[in-house]
Amino acid sequence: MPFSVLRNFVLGTLVLIIALFVGGFLLPDTARVERQALVQASPEQIFPLINGFSRFNEWQPWARIDPGMKVERSGPAAGVGARQAWFSENKGVGSGNLEVIESVPHERVRMQLQYTGFDGDNQSLFTLKPQGQGTLVTWTYQTRVGNNIIGRYFGLMLDGMVGKDYETGLLNLKLLAEREASRPAS
Image 1 (cartoon, rainbow, N blue to C red):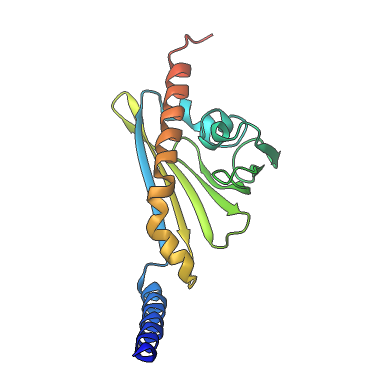
Image 2 (cartoon, rainbow, N blue to C red):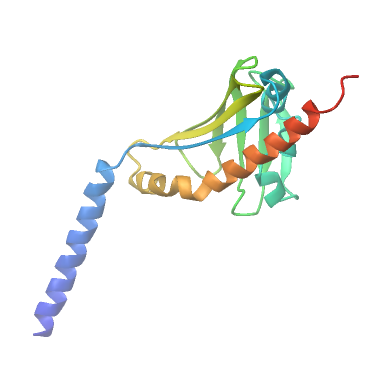
């Protein structure tokens, strides 16, 4: 009797492992997180806040999670080639670098992300669409994990892991842009 229980346990475990492995290849090889906010400021007023890194840490949420995060900037101050590397011992922030790879004035900014210890094609995109007296700001993150089975399972949880951070970041950006837009012109 004990041998049959052990055999069934081993067979059941093998079937489960095989199912998880095969099931991983059936999952999408990309994951996406997207959030939007209506900001009462023009695209011209918002664009400088996202087109480089000189003001990035004023609104992005991870700088507030780890105020001791170290940041190094290189390349031009704004536009294509602007780059920021960050280093944090906080697991919720991690380390990596961002580089602006596309910049269309007052319309969109695309960034390439590299996280220390994670492979994959990771991009962040900001789009600005005039809407009434304001601007609809869309912040999208997309990653391509390829044949990495663990990455495919991770992709299922991505929105739940960083979606709130994107909402917080957009709220911070909204407050900053609206505060600046309400200042009298000098």
